[in-house]
Image 1 (cartoon, rainbow, N blue to C red):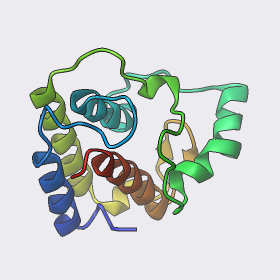
Image 2: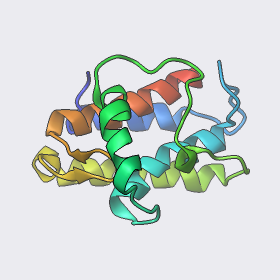
Image 3: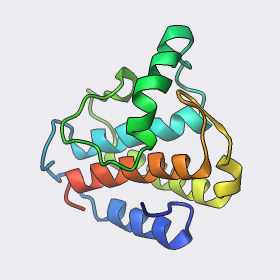
Image 4: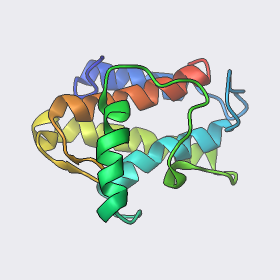
Length: 150
């Protein structure tokens, strides 16, 4: 797994995002490019913007037991796999704004560095190691950028 906390890797991901066009068609799935960017931004909204309610009780337990290993594990996501309701983007978004938000979030993560995230609690999965944060960040972006051929 590439290290999103490494400046060169962040630059490489940002370059891939910058190579995405608003008219790019997905190789699989139903999202448009603007929706995909907004979808990817949800991860960072959960960390930095307190925009999404935190799961509680039984829901949080199920996320930790059954979803966490899929999200932070090294196994790639399957194409067309289901996503959490907060990540479903069904309306059109402003491509330029979503792209700028995503790259800003990436630079924020890179600037904060891996020590900031080591042992930090995630929105849905409890405390995560730096490696788990990295995997969650990189794997999700890589999956969707591959979905759009960049």
